[in-house]
Image (cartoon, rainbow, N blue to C red):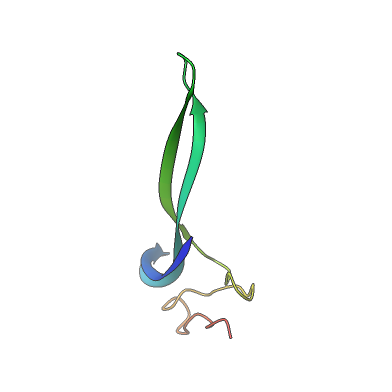
Length: 71
């Protein structure tokens, strides 16, 4: 995984900056005719808690504050 930064997400009725991380998952799947084929899926995980310190993140703009920086 690689840390990508922040994305824009709908939180309630507002747009907010939310930290996210892209992921790539790979697995072997058995074929009916025998053998295996590798399949890959990608996506993004948006966090509601800081992935480094574990503090709950409040979305920017929902209460007038900004999310904690994780320091």
